[in-house]
Each structure stands twice: as C-alpha cells, then as structure tokens.
Image (tube, rainbow, N blue to C red; front, side):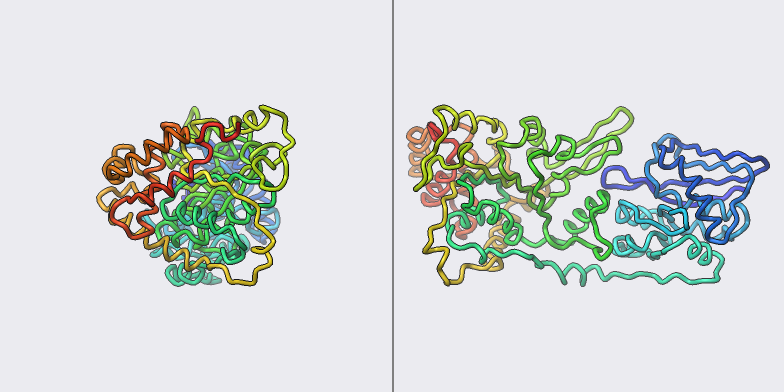
Length: 512
C-alpha cells in the first residue's frame, strides 16, 4: 500500500515542501531514496525501535521510502516522525485519509519520544502557504509554529500520541499564540540600561548618533574604560523591532536552533558578541550543512567585535561584502543559499598592544613602530565601512562616585525613534533604504548638501587633520544624522563640526 505524508526541508531561511512516500510490499528489505544524507538513512533504526516500544508493530516486509522532490538533498533527523507515521499508515495501523491535511516533523528517540527540530517557523509558514490545515511537531517547537496565522499547531511528546490522534482515540491540544500580544509584551524588555553607565557622556552621544542613523562604530580606548559596557547597551536605544523585522529575525534564529521552548517570537533586537578566535564560516555562515553565521544571527541588531585587531585578518575581510550588501550568499556545487545580514557593526580595540597609548595618566611601553603595526591589522577597506571612530577615555573617580541619575535608555531611544521617522519619510520612495548609513554616494550629494561655510570647514579639516578621501562621504552621512536628531532640515556648520570629530583613525599620525 502506498501512503504519503508531508514535511519540509529548510534552505537558507525559507522552507520547501517535501512529500514522504511510503510503500510496503512483499519482501524483507528497507530502501530509502530521494537524496537522503546519513542522518536520514539511519532513521530506520530509530523508527523501528520507536514503533515497537510505543506498542505498535514494525512491518517485516519490503519498505520503500521516497523523499520527493528526489533531486534535492534531505538533511537531518527531523523526517523520523513523518516516516514512522507513513509506515504505520501503509501497514494499516492508522487510517491515512487525514494525513494530507498535516505537515508532520520531528526526530524520534528509540523509546518513541520526540526531540526538537530546527526551522519550525519557516516550515510553518510554508505549510500555511501550501494550504495545509495543521502542523504536528515537537512540543519544544510548537510556540514557534503557533505564531503563523491560519495554521493549527499541535505539540506532541511521543509517537504513540500522534498515532492515537490519527486513530481518533485521543485529541491533541492546539497551541495558540496571540502574535501582537506576544510582540508588545516583551518589546522593550532589556536587562541593561544606559543609566548604569557613569560619565562617558560624549561616548553615549556618539552611540546615540550611531543608533539614529544605523552607522557602524569603532570604540578606541584603554582597558577598563567602559567600551564593552557601552556596546552591550546599544540595542536598548535602537528603535523597537516592528512585526515584520521580529518575524524575519525569529526565522533566522529558528533555522539555527537558537530559540528556547518558551520563545515564540523575538521581540528585542539581537546582540551577538563572538570571540576573536571565531572562524570565517562561523562568522558569515556556511559549513557542510549550511547554517546562519554570527552576522546573520545579528540581523536587525548589533554585532559586537571586542578587541578587533585580535581577530584573524581573513575573518574580518569576509565581512566586507555583507557590510555593503546586507546579505550573505553561501554557494556550493549543488546549491546556494542566502541569509540576510543587515546589522550594526560595533567594534572595540585598545590603541596599542599594552593598551595605554594616548592615556591621560599611564605611559605606553610599546616600542617605536609597534602602535602603527598594531593598528594596521585592521585594513583600510574595513575601516572605510565604519562611520564613527570614537576615542574612549577612562572615567574619573568623581564621575564614578557620583549619585546623580544618568539618562535612561528609553529617553535616548525616543530621540532615536524621532530621527528614524524623519529618515523613513526621506526614503519613502526607496523601500530598500531604512537609514542614513545605507545611502549611496549619489544620494549623499543630494541629501547632505552643505553651504559655503560648510564646504570651507570640510576642506580645512581634510587638509589640516590629514583626513583621507574615504572619510568625506562618511562625514556627510553622520552630519545628516546629527541634523536629524536636532530636527534640522539642513546640515548646519555645528553638525558638520561634530561629525568631523568622529574620524579619529583617519587623522594622519594618529598613531605616530
């Protein structure tokens, strides 16, 4: 008897419907076809044990399982449950008339219990688009799937439960998630706050500008000056995720298997801080079975690279294209996948190996030329993609001991939201643009016009401070964001002057 069940394969952050065809006939062998990988081929042992221990019967006949379409590689253990249900239906132990209404996914343990899967959200979206009535999946993943409107999500613990459901001897409880309520409940639920940081008002100002315009930023300063503490709090002043961004971000984390059972929707912006020993593949994504990398997990949020010069040069260079394109394409011989990667890069570094170059009180003990060599570990093209270079100085005792209340994150965030609203209106006819940082050179000339005095100031700055030509566009973009924060229609002289101040590493002889 031939029976069909339905599941899905995840490619990138999207899913594709897979039909699992099971045919039982005279004979004794078991065949798995349709480009399965080793994890799928091994399913027979798990399925046979799970069926027998669940009080059901594993047929001792010829079983052929085909995963269609047959020209697409199937990976992972999440096909165990639909294969087991297909075998039970083909052997007459459960009716097959309802199977066409459900997506079924899950990994089986030998005792019949069901283990979680990756990519439940994109699979649920695909099931809904294909007109399926419901999705039966592990209980640990059910809240992800329940986010999708128009699809019934059923969480199950074991194989016997699913068999009893199709035999109509047991009902499954549908899990419902109110997406809007879930979204609004935790939208600004952050552990950290800018009010925790004493002093450093100039750095907070720079990060506010970065958040308002979506600019990348690098913090340069001695150990213990507060670079990491400030970077951790940057997501708290970014505008809240909208529902589309939340779904997009949740899809990526779902595919990577990073969502907990309690999560249904990511409502706060991601913050990723990989260690400097990270490999190229772990950062941008890929591998034998491609997975999203750290830059994609930081999509719609912040990627923080602490101690930037300590990262391998090859790791930093592979980030250059994603920083421009805001996506990363992983190409293999048989297929290619694309992951979104629109993130804010925040990097921090010491000014030299000992950490005390330009320190107001401590002396640098580095040999001549060492500082320049240390800074040259970061290539010009990468620095070219960083808009704000901010020097962080140590906080003095008076500021640390002060009991005065610092400005809270939500106050700063309100100013950032107002600036972003101005940018949304400015780029209303360009849906691919969301912030000043994403402007092309052509748009910079149009949007960031400056008067005669501004042109003279910028010319003098480039000559006297030795600013490089690549700093020109960056200065204008940041000045436009400063003007937006001030509610100014034009880029004024003071906006330009403040913007010039944020180009420390472009100054000739900064490390000389």
